[in-house]
Length: 242
Picture 1 (cartoon, rainbow, N blue to C red):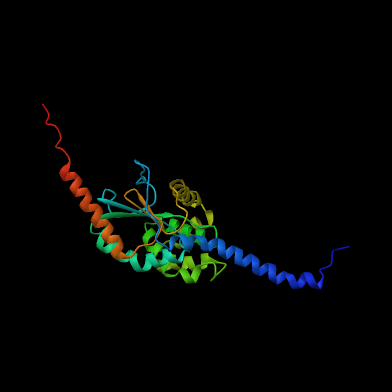
Picture 2 (cartoon, one colour; picture 1 turned 180 degrees about the vertical axis):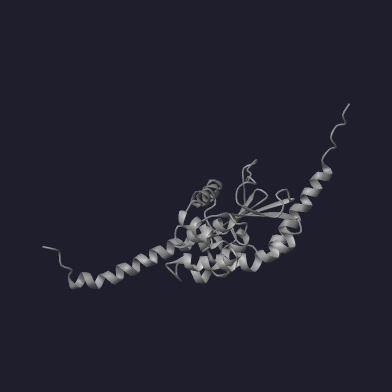
């Protein structure tokens, strides 16, 4: 005979469901708490480099300053940086040749649709439109995130159509999940470096577990540029060839 659920058990069920929701929400919130406060910068080990072949590059790879973001497409702080700050960073820092900018996927486990967003961007990259999809995803974050829909592909494919991508090729790429390995490699790279929150930036070998305003980032880039110029000026001349 099947076990019967008593009235007392029924009355406790909503409590345990609420408790589960609180625990899950709290676990996800840890990332935001870490990233939303100013953390002490961490200087990475000498010689630590992010290969040019990894991540999604914008700007010149040999620019004086290197900026890398480890981000999650479903992270609100990443979305805020991507829509409010990043346009100025691109126009006035990256496009001006002052720094390069690379984006690395760092999907957090508490976000139901972030992997779909990363796949959407990776598949757009195969058609030369990663950054356009990146922007559309962040601008429409409230339309496709885990709270908005259980079918993010439908929304994301709408972005592909708006961007003029080959929809059939994009859809086939998305469904194949062939780029999951690439996304996971980005995440592992971040984990190996000590990244555990989003957004996290690595700027010339120093890791910042925080977001930035444009002015903050511009001051940092300017100070690094000045320091490099001074170091270059003080360097002893190379010995003359006999």
